[in-house]
Image (cartoon, rainbow, N blue to C red; front, side, top):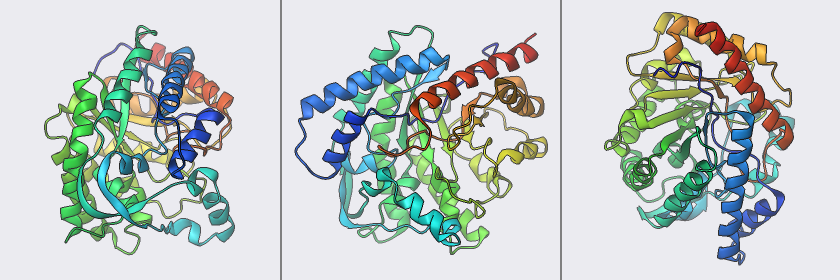
Length: 379
């Protein structure tokens, strides 16, 4: 990758307008919603967030996930097989802090989240939705020459994390059924000429949630299985058309149970997507840049470290952003680094601790910081 500068991007979810949130909540609750009105509002919202990203100077932008109730749970509306009892979650880090737990899970976006178990075979239910997402994004991008686009999609592993298996004989069978079902969405995105981002919090957050009772060796075995399912699902897509997001959970918790990147990076490299996005700005993971002095970056891989936090209302100073980018570029080479955000700004409709105006200011600071760093590495 050589663009003559540090390209900027973000993880996916962006603030939604209040009226759109109300429509999404109503649909999630099973209430009657005017489908045409919702589709028109989503199309308009995509145009608005694409314009805001372009205005902030971000190079690789998306639809802000405006059509989705969340980055993962939207899958229940696109695949058959979900209808069992809802899943319950234990986040090991917040179990030590009941007040934090109550605040996090009282969030409106999480309260409206629907996660029924898989209780029937996984098959494709709605192929139109992903094509509409792609068409909305491409139409909006056409109004902003020079921008590139991506669309996010849930990984097989994170889908299995949110939607418990109550049908298949084994977790492996379930994962690979999900992989085959999700394959159609992945291929539709890339066939439209849009980069696919696969969201993979199962590979990090899974350690202190779904697999909290396993030791590290056991978790690595489950990671390897999830990656095998992801690779199966993306087998027909060129690695250069894909990126993956590694995440320890986008919530304002203590995160003291997060698995160290050093314990999993070797397995992460085995996933097919060529670019790896990961949290690198927040206080729990900012130190891990030093790991790459030892491990480097394999041929064909690109790093997209988060250089902006998504849980903080602080607007990062562009110089700090430039310094963060520079740390990685010095270790792995300027052509192997892009600049990103730790995670999404509104991963569930109605959630998000950062004011929308601050979100756009943070993205503008990202672009400014990347420009500063680019001048230093491409003098």
